[in-house]
Length: 170
Length: 144
Image (cartoon, rainbow over the protein chains, first blue to last red):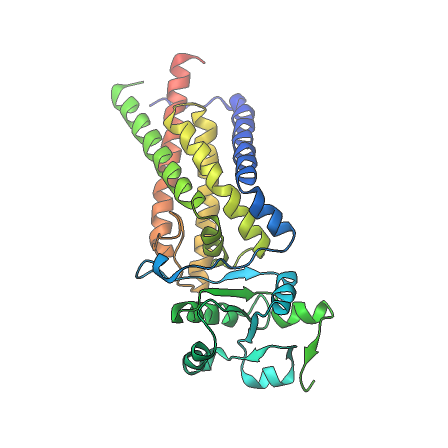
């Protein structure tokens, strides 16, 4: 097999590859322009998934939401759940949040299901981007039957840095 | 170019193009779900997860379609190889951090583990390599 490659063609090949990439991105943004607009306006939240639309064996995943979405969701009745241990919750937590430690989720979720309907909007958070507990709690809530679960990945640090209301003993 | 090389070229081209076209169509069908699967990798801010979910499937569809149509083969296969390399890095980071997530490579209902997806991506990289180089043989032979 002749393996000689004419490298003088490489700039043209690279340029065409970039053009294909750009065209694909443009088409994607055009087709999803409504989603992109909502995203830029901070209106994207976790989609509601009907129970019968979920095939058996498929694990649902909570979608991340930003700080502006959390603020607007709280004013419209969403429930904010703090996935950290209760000691940390008592020290400081986002105003209006409930303590819902991941370690106690298996005992707390049945009570929450009696209190709230499956379509209730729930947002979990913990100690920022390095903390996986809020995500793990979101997965548990979805697995339990809640259909509208989101994760505020910025958590306490982003909320505090934004100067938004914090409650606690600190 | 020998006959077996032509067969190998078309096999690699059709296999690679078909796989990416199929994967792109599945992901484009449910962008929010795909965004959730990208979020599970915990590599990017949430806005970027959505933007990637909105655009990546269409790049795959376009590049895969070009390969199936036997047009712009080398740029398309080079682009898909570069994307596959990025996927491999993402999968390695997931494996290194011990996450047990579905790779999401073929849409929301793809339950491949990161390890399985990594093996598949290495196979795709080989396909892209041969598609690119066998196309070079065609171009060199035709003198275009």
